[in-house]
Amino acid sequence: MILVFGFVIAAFVGGTVFMSLAFQGSRNIPQHATILPQAAALPRFSLLDQNGAEFNNESLNDQWSLIFFGFTHCPDICPATLQQLAIARSQVLDAGESTFPNIILISVDPERDTPEVMATYIGHFGDGLTGVTGSLTELRTLTSALGIFFEKSVADSGNYSVDHAAVVIVINKNAEFHALFSAPHNVDYFVNDIPLITGST
Amino acid sequence: MTTRLFVPVLCVLVIACNPPAGPPLTISKMVVLEPLPGTNVTAAYLTLDNNSNQPIAIEKVTSPQFARVTMHETVIQDEVARMVSLAPLIIDRQSIVRFEPGGKHLMMSDPPQEVTLGLPVTVEFHYDINDLLIVTTTVSSIDDLPE
Image (cartoon, rainbow over the protein chains, first blue to last red):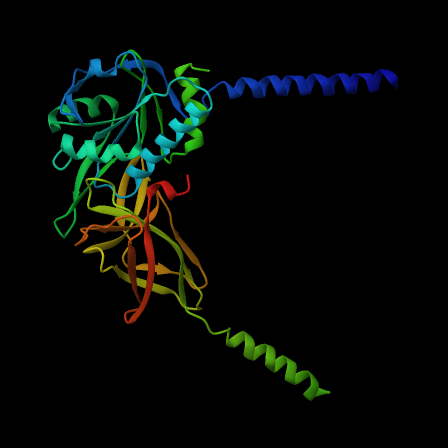
């Protein structure tokens, strides 16, 4: 009887320790982002940042970046996603992390989104944001490599919107496509996973 | 004895067939966001409550502060976000429809005059052909949206 009781106690303690270790392990793995099995190099591209300066592959070197493709006349998902990223940035830095990836909005509506428009727009979301625009040809070069879809959608009124991919792309310090977050987005997903992806925890 | 039973039963039936009178359509939690700098477009979020026993059709939405107001839903399919028109929006009897970031929203654009934080905004919901519900709120910042 005592032997059986001892066995039960030992099994319980062992199980608890195992579950605890397994849980700790899972907390160190991104739970929401999809990590590419092998980071992919980007094609050569040349766009413009919000100051009118060239934004190209070298602009992504030596820092992690989060890229969202959207446009300034987008009423819902674009500002909501940028707001979520900006909040995540604040929360991660407030929690003691020393860095957070650069947040980059690349416009899929270069017709309306000039560098000046981008500068005014991204200014609302605080520091650490870059607004990028440029020619459709250069934009297509980059989006094709990342598997990013976008297409102009003209309404009967003549106004237009742009259908576009809703993912957030993670670019590593070597300017390579490293991971992505699928929509719908959530501040907690970014706060939990980004430090794990960038290796800052 | 029969009469004693009949009166309460009749009362229950009358109450069941005539629910307390109230507005068929109510709107709550309405937030009209300030257009972001450099843009002439914004979104509004709200909750629509059909308190009646009939479906309600929202035919269109207007606002004196915006030249165009349209009901849209952001639909994400195969990782692509598309805006789908909702007009007319049918609200089933005794049901609630929520307009929330990343989902259903009012797209409000082309304000004749600048729309700034704190400005009163009137939003007019035209429903069931001839009915009108007018709601007034003030312009909010995107920073005030729940995460």
